Image (cartoon, rainbow, N blue to C red; front, side, top):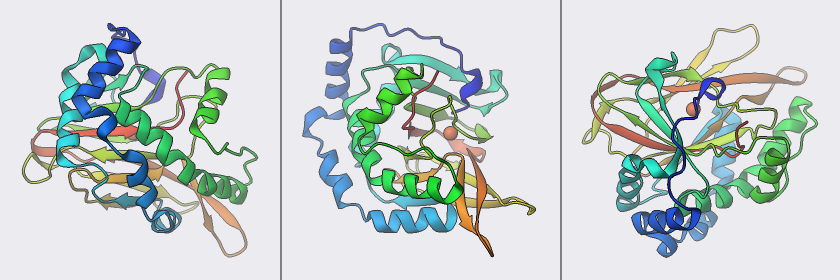
Length: 266
Ligand SMILES: [Fe+2]
């Protein structure tokens, strides 16, 4: 989330092995076939959405029980490296926690499985925007690049919002190395678990007023969206369009999401 001011608060209390075993038990562990699910996604549709508006919805990526198991991890302080109370930093209202390594199996699997499908798009976008950076085909290779540059802290996180909580518009930039796309998965059921609290993304084109996109998600749906900038074809050439994202105020209930950011943090 709001990378520049995140305090390091909660040390990893468990051993890596113990933490991984606990995560696997809580989330269903190896019985999850994340790879096959991710392979079955129409990545062409995702690419079209990202090219047209800067974000794309993947429906029903996680089942309801998987969402509930991830939500239940929020109370497990030993799984996290940092807890951020947004109101203390001017980020909004609500809170979130960054996972420690090793990540819960389901988060690790999603991060590794989704990344390769986004690499061709990320490289194409950089080429169109005149940015020389190209991304390796596997996530482990990209994470090595982050770690070699001192970006060693994991960025996947769970966010928790209650009534009247919200998340100010922001970008999740955590250092020099930035993968230009990220994913968020809604873990709660709109209408039943909460009301209000919609994902909002703004688009800032050169010399124009910002445009807002509001995305209606269901429990278990994933949203892939632009971290920073994307290319939009102008009359002669591509221009860079800047995006920010946030969450509108919850009217009632409680809302959890998991965020999967592909670069690590300084
Ligand atoms: Fe964010």
